[in-house]
Length: 272
Ligand code: SAH
Image 1 (spheres, rainbow, N blue to C red):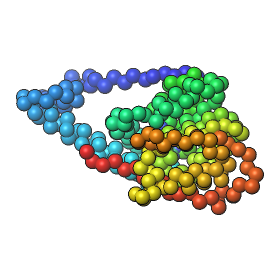
Image 2 (image 1 turned 90 degrees about the horizontal axis):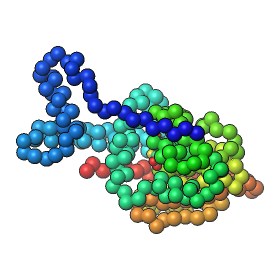
Image 3 (image 1 turned 30 degrees about the horizontal axis):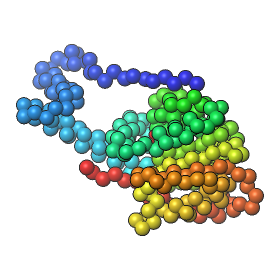
């Protein structure tokens, strides 16, 4: 599998085409504001622009984030289909948020994967920037709503193009966002081989029953009823919980419709 990294040229080379001197000057101010983050008295206007831009993109991120946590996967797919640039905006904001976390859950999962059999086939549900595929030797099917990378399969992860019983590991790293999250787990059950691993990392605040969050016991119970064994949990991190399951054969498990799925509290970020 190829892991091509695309480098984007962020320099705006089109200024020469602009015949209007005033707007040329403005463009220069804007581009210098984005490239020189120094705070000096003399560059107060660009400082101001820089702050405004950060505030605007922060606002956009929070809006898209809220949308993704409060709609179904199908709606989210249509949302990004209408304007795929929103996806890049979302991920720029996501990166900023994550940079405040002492540890990234995706790195914990990558470490775990590196200790497993390298022949394991991995399905990364809601892969974002496909960090898993870029970090391990395994075959990784990276799935997300938008694909800006030839290695990422664009789909709603409730309906992936992956074959049944084809993966050894299914990963959901901070990606159980839609209100219909159980359908993503049903899809993971279909795609996983018997005995295959299901790893879920989710934001801790979504599982705080005293604060409108789900009870992690109920969440774990619902997944077990879907047809998984709970193997391990790691609640030691301040920011996220980690659940490890393996796929079992369904014997007397409840029918899909009877499973009581707790609703997971949306993870909304505050304005800083
Ligand atoms: N797992 C990555 C990215 C987490 S952000 C990481 O840890 O770095 C959550 C990602 O899930 C976003 O990229 C979002 O687009 C994706 N996602 C949310 N709902 C989805 C759905 N229904 N189908 C596919 N991807 C989805």
